[in-house]
Amino acid sequence: MRILGIESSCDETAASVVADGTRMLSNVVASQTALHEETGGVVPEVAARAHLRALVPVVRRALADAECTWDDIDAIAATAGPGLPGALVIGLNGARGLAYARGLPLIPVDHIEGHVCANWLDAATGAPSGHGAPPELPALALVVSGGHTELLLMREHGRFERLGGTRDDAAGEAFDKVARLLDLPYPGGPPISHLAATAEVRKLRLPRAWLRTGDDFSFSGLKTAVLHLVQSSDAPPPAEIAWAFEESVVDVLSQKAARAAEREGVASMLVAGGVAANRRLRERVVERSPVPVHIPPPVLCTDNAAMIAAAAFRHLDDAVAPESPLDITPTAVRRGRRFS
Ligand code: KG4
Ligand code: ZN
Image 1 (cartoon, protein in one colour):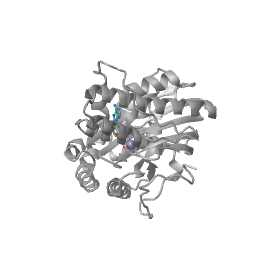
Image 2 (cartoon, helix red, strand yellow):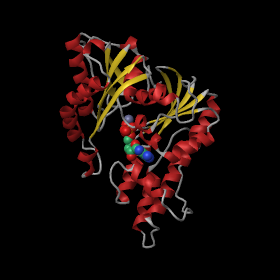
Image 3 (cartoon, protein in one colour):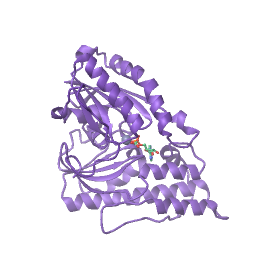
Image 4 (cartoon, protein in one colour):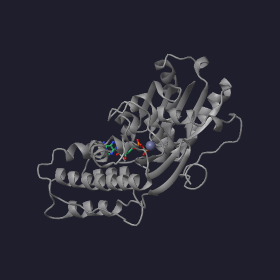
């Protein structure tokens, strides 16, 4: 079964054809990074209009790369949320129009579940720790991106329990904001990571918000600590600040995820979302986790549509007729069927 996935929740317009929820036949991602660099972050309306311009060429490319015609496609999936409302509307309604024209079922997909499902793609199951097999369930999922920091107990596909999440900034948002403080470009994760790797002295210790009574996270205090440091008269070199910041984020994420995995008695640990591309985080989670760790290759950690098609394959029963009423879900569904 071939599903065409479409993703447009933030600043990447993406389309991908995935066979049987695992085999990626194409993976096209048009990034708007250059557009948002000047403002140091995503301006929602600018993002929505860029999706509008990019959607059709990206879908065409995804079909061409997969060497597919429309006759080879069995269903169309698109991100319904969470994400920026204007951006979501473009992708979901575009998908709906295509589904209507082709008489295909339409599968709305939760973006966070998409990130988790990237771990079922063939390109992920062999890497990075070489298990070579799909993750075993139940699993503990740590989803860390620009918009989310979620710790989820995944009992089976489509059945998630939310254990905790950030109370303020998402982990990726903290990287992006600290990058601005250090005069680094947007998105901040990769440049902070590169700068941190050049730090000569590795002694600086920045605060860690453990919030020990639960599985929640907080990164705003850390960001403020960096601000004070940068403004101080005897500020350490930026590379040392970047290193200390990255260590603090990675320490908290990896330790809290490992403890939750142990407590819940899961069979595996899944890490996903843009921040999962971070080399230090990947190392630390693997070191600390009591169970086998699955993390997609970096290109499938950041936003893409293969993960949306992979998730859709597990939700064929949720397919709707394109002419049926449909809405986006811009904020995460914290309670209810998917994230109870
Ligand atoms: O999943 P994603 O592409 O989009 C959202 O759903 O938000 O994640 C983007 C986020 C950005 O905040 C970016 O700075 C962060 O992921 N990111 C990283 C790295 N690569 C991307 N953070 C830390 N280290 C990285 N290597
Ligand atoms: Zn994302």
